Image (cartoon, rainbow, N blue to C red; front, side, top):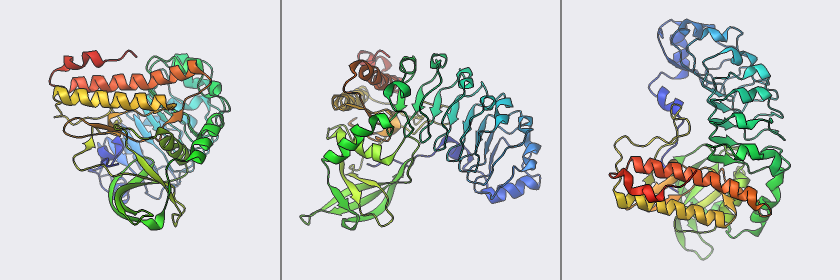
Length: 437
């Protein structure tokens, strides 16, 4: 696989700012008056810097990730312009209740803390994007249902066994991550009211007890070899995603032949979409197809115990169709502003991705993350669908629920076709490919 580096929208917005240590010094010296964005990641913080309140009238985005914070100040609502708050990789054990009094918060991210409790008061109704990945949350408050603007809900890697009743209130919800929790049944993780939401198009639910047997069977059945790390010669970085890093590599096969490959090494035990083992199981079950990035093997005997995939090396000339969503676009990919597609190219992309999706559904899989940033294309429009981090197995014994899940992927495909049409030299040329949601 050969994607370009994926970076979150906030990182892109803050690229031009000083390093965090210098930023903190500048803040304390009063030299950041009027700033709208503040990056204090890796700043060695154990307490919230009170100097931040000097920006109360202008500060819109604040990143306090990768510190040692355990609490936020009770007067946080003084930051009246604050819309984006990231506090990932800190030491919070409870989602701060004060967040609920920050009436303008649009995006809240508390990934990879030790949060066990989400107070009802902690969720402002203004939320559009809530990230609570990789914590210890066992229950969610009913106050979540007041967040009717919510589009993206990231809950992978927690201890949830049920969802609040009344999810039909969240009519704008488009992306949900429920992987790697403790849902014993599909009914608990995927209630009918969730699957019936009119805009839901991206869903991850693997790595739960209800699908453990399917994943274990796929891994046990195999179909791709275990590739010893010593047989791989790893080279340049090709790309980096939320779940892992991808390097160029050469594999010396048992017959002595050297093959150009790509190796994806997972970063940790839990990703934003789920578990590495779930992704590996889905990749094996997906098999081969002309429009899918193929997996050739599973990394074995890595010296640090890392898990990984050995994948086909994509020829030069392929590029990511788009970049991932930004904080502003939330659930829509960011395309190059000057992208214009000839009709044959746009049609080839849409048809290729549609064929890949039909293949996956035929093999009992939900992709769950069908986005342009997970699609590689060449100049002629040949498409390769990749990234199975959100993929999960469809229920073989419940055709009605399986069909409802497939409709989510088809809705994501419809979004893609619309995006292609918007960038096609003849927007009406793809009308026959548009799919009902």
